[in-house]
Length: 481
Image (cartoon, one colour):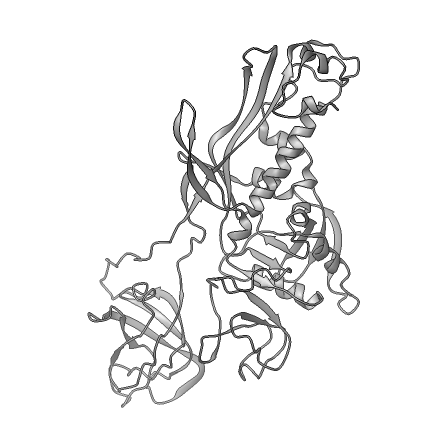
């Protein structure tokens, strides 16, 4: 194929006269861009194909506020120890960011602190203490709480006293509880924090001479050779951007147009809230742990799709399943028309597919576990084609313009870092731990693959534990990295 037929290069009459192929007028660019792009080289650019099939949201600005996590925070930790004074109510010490979340008339479950029988005389092991938010402390804005099932000095007392609650205790927010004639309740004071997303404008064009388009070819090809090359390159470059692009906004001086903004979008590699920093060989137990983390959080997706680099895919395929006959591994064609390896677990199925772009980006040992129904495709202006006559040439420039961005929705998604690139990041990662001894590195969250008395006598298989600087504690609820 002549180099004069690459995008952006004028195709002269002399050069195109000798080109063979079957390009009929109007067949260079199809009007239905999304479907065209999806069907073309589908296996080579899986992430872009996911974006083209994701929920589409039309916006009226290239800058949008994206709310990744819709569910408000429901799990807190006490910042300092609450001493027992024998009083009927006490100030619950929470972190600054959490103090306004429990509103008046809310009920709170205190993990690890036993409650008492209705007469307040006997502890009920394993049946936790529950608190009722009565008011707010004017000095600190912390909630003022009463114990629903706390100890009593006398069985005839109307109210329970508030027992001691250690620092770092997990508090779980339950439903509010209103008095008999109450109708009005305080509105929720928490507002989700948005992330600014930039939509990036991308384009592709062809320059073809009038002579070339007017020729009647003997052999009609379904796809034009020139268009194939251009669309393939357009998709591959766009796919790399969807993975690894960095957000940016800056001005350039355009001749005769003045200063204009250029936007670059943030790749989903940098949008993950959970990163599993993996080392060593993959085992069945590790895959099941991965499925458990993915399917059992606050945000539960319908499907799990693992887009994997070639080395990660090879490691998973070489796992010894002989000791786990209950695990089902099968090849299937999924709803997107891809041939995938389906890994069936009791928590849910993981569909595994190779993503060639990860290899091109140097992430062959890594992968992304994505909830297919948890992606958002933001579109500023609908994809459209244009056809312009080139001044001074017997040629026409045809092209596509797309202005969009891909964003993760929800907290289920997990980035598997096999390159150890995340070490030193501001975000805290997750590591799988299969030793009875406590880890020396306390800067990570650890998913326990076995009981770990070195961390705590209560550290059980399948739990998440982290170190708060003074002691180990179990992580419950959303993991905010």
